Image (cartoon, rainbow, N blue to C red; front, top):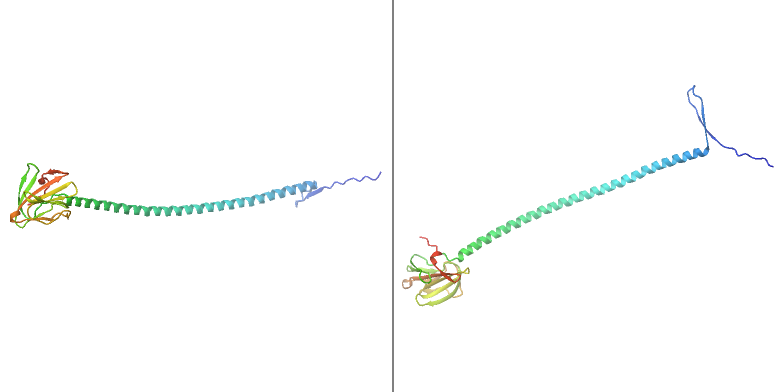
Length: 237
């Protein structure tokens, strides 16, 4: 039987020495695999620590990028907000200008409407110069004027001549429709100065008055009903 060989166990030894005279030398024995495991674990811990640091740096860098992007978005939104506010201010100014324009236009239209209404409402005197007047209230109301020589019969408001007829009592009559429900009738035997269909304004001459045709019969209708002209006439003097 051959010589049996015994496997020799290897041990590592750690010697700790001190500079102090009183302190002896300490020896520690340990197995190689324990040293290797310790070194391996230490490397793992160090590697994990280094990896963690790099990971944290990457995470922090990513967070910084996200914050930077968020700040850029916030800045962009602030710029858009400022632009929108400027646009709103501009629109408000435009709206105010348009509102003022509309108000001015409405005011002008109202003034024109009032002026037109005044021009088409038969309130003026139907003669130039002075005249005496007699009021007839029986039957269809009428004002009978006796004008001075050289006077003219004139339209009391703007309108359209709708009829020029012969008149059995006064010689002729002229009807003027003022377009607002009012119609005025002028009865006189003087020279006729307008024709049917003609547009007249307040003061347009209808008849020339002489010594032989000084009488004017003046009547008025409102919505087809005769009314007293004196209720509408504005007489000064």
